[in-house]
Length: 73
Image (tube, rainbow, N blue to C red; front, top):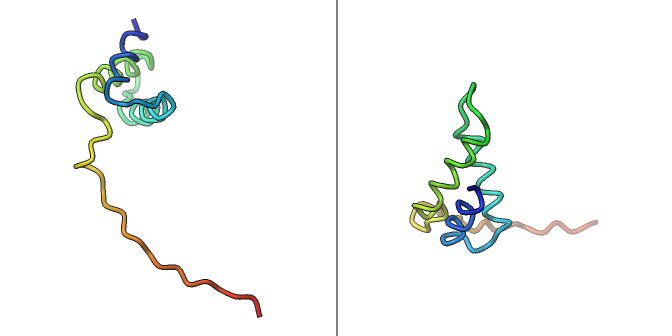
């Protein structure tokens, strides 16, 4: 059942909204034509249950950029 997949995926992602966002992005990227969207979603949730989708080591470091303030004349 999909609820079991969701609760399994929540072990790695503690925020339900964030899980929904990650799952929808992954489903769009992994979906193959001529297959059911429900099967792709279940596969994504199954992958999230087995691995950590938000692994810190795979994230790209964000550099701080200094922005000059513009003042009105």
